[in-house]
Image (cartoon, rainbow, N blue to C red):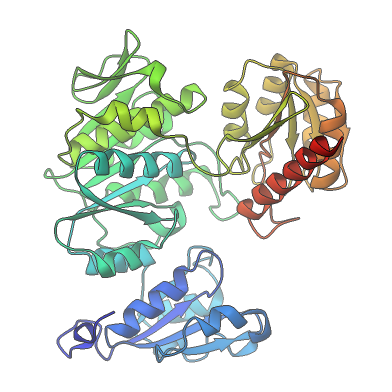
Length: 464
């Protein structure tokens, strides 16, 4: 941060800003640091007690930000001029409603990032595939000689990247429905919508509310911008009427002369072959679609795709997304902890031809597991279930004709059961179809715990 950012002509200079949330992925801390460096008077609230936030509070030392925790959180929030909540904070909590009644402006972190960014933004959203597509887009841009700063819900918050960006950079950000729900002017040069199926219905009252939040991605686009939308996903494609931008559809099923498609084994953009599908290292047909989306977005951002095939062939994916952890006793263990909905687990089951032992369960985000259960039955997969949703999934599975069902006390027990049941050539797939919050801080902790347990198995095998 440079001292010049706190100049009195800086638009945040002297502004009373209230930031909510110190934990999670560090969004609140990033907002506080950036706006304090630009001369804002920053207060940060978190309802956790201070003793649980020692490291987070220490990270703000020297910024001048005031931290309020526990019962003191939200004190004076109605007197602020701007409120920036972290994505995990519901927008209807009483302090935010009171502030809204007083006319206080409330926006998400990506909105503030847009205000300060000196360069174009490419924003990727969808129910699943966001992180993989965002990371791959960044790699394709870099391979084409573009300066791409990749973040959002993957790595650094978008505001931290915007704060250090230069005019010739491109910000590539994964954005969520929670963030989009609180934008005002946010306008991505390229907006990517991958898919839409039920998710986060614990936060969005209905699927319609969830769809409307996602649709805000396109709200401020102009004909100078581009909207990359999955033509094969009915719900996603229904939003193409919500943008004035140039639409670039992509499809695995039909030719898209104005976008990206799969034809005769080649991934194509604007009808031009770019990469043989066989060179995509990511498992699953859904990842061919994600690759098409990244290629279309890179083209829309002015990148040459001449070297994209090499970039794609080197790209091995993202942690917690169909991540092959290791092979123990001839059994392949795969970490797909990112799969927090039945649809995501459905896609993971489609990615393997081998016999699958599926570890699933956790805190349910949806009420209906029938579609997943039918897929498990078709695949003749074995089930190991844990967490709050275990009986819901087991009931749906039994109704679908699945008989190979086991219950585990926790993830360690689930791995033990899978190791006992697995035979050489099998795949043990952690793809929970549920959130992690009944047992873990987040899906990343769940995935890393799984990886640690597999490392223990491998160590035991080496000593035998």
